[in-house]
Image (cartoon, rainbow, N blue to C red):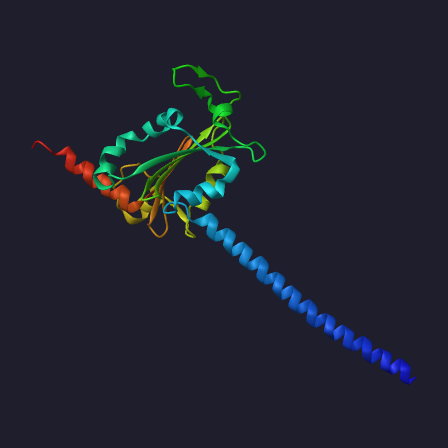
Length: 234
């Protein structure tokens, strides 16, 4: 009888130790999961204002930088704003990436854009492009304006929502028409914003196959600059 009693005590102590260990293990796992999710959310939120090197590292092997031969056409899409930007940011630079639309297919300049030789000859791309072109205008190595172009397909509503969300900085995107209707005031804009963050810091233009992000400060500054230029000569 005594042996049975001692056996049950040992079983009880073993159970207590197991529960204590399990609680500690579960707590540690919960901390790991929490900080993992936190780091993911933080890395997914910040875009405009980030170092270009950070953006490039995040895309990893799914993206390649385009040489000037292939990037010029994308850069010219926003060229109407460059004269105004250069007044304030003479050291701004353009960086253009192509990111694959398929996580299992690594992009290649030769395969997706072709080859342009120094002697003027060229070779066509080996496949039809399917992915994204990301045009970044940077100052001192940090992103100031970002333009996303879809290649090979139209931008779906789901893709638009994802790109807006990862550039939300933890805030909510509001549609311009709703804000103007509520405030009875119209935005001054150069880029033609369609959305604005709830904290007012960042704006976006969603237009067909293009999504552009820019700070409210830059957009309003350029709008004022263009307004001043329009009256020159009076």
